[in-house]
Image (cartoon, rainbow, N blue to C red; front, side):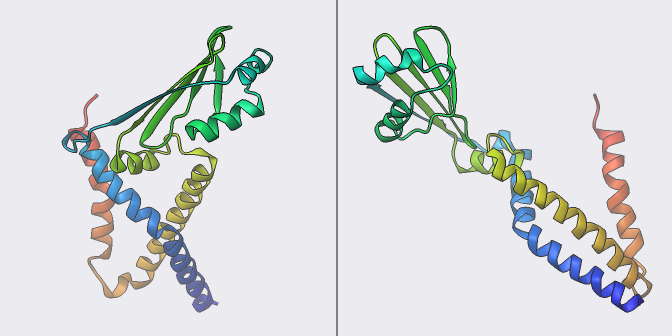
Length: 196
């Protein structure tokens, strides 16, 4: 029975490490880049585009509240290559669409009376992209689910690893002192070096 139990612990440790491997590497690397963000310079790239909404589509806007008519959405997709998500009516004459994303931000305005469309997008580069993935910033529901699955797999990996340390600790006398250092060190740093 005991051998079967340890076999299950090893299996769960192996499976959880396979699930969390890429996430752990990504989070370790982006942890470093986030920790040294001031030292990593980046130049945001801003792109501005203007267009004019055709009159037949512009006339459909007044009855579109709270969203946009499908024909206007399709025109924005084909003309400006944007997918409008958060549509806000700023006033009777202006529509604002925010389109934030990881490592980037974009917004679009439509003047209802004239049909003038203004798009401004800012890209902060690949490091900012991966940093935002680390934080789950503007990443959507699919990435949020990945983060949850990754977090659970990481907890299973750590707990089964602790059980495996227990199994092999008899022949390795430095096991528990090393675990103790890993447990106590963060608390000592918090107490003595992080001040409010």
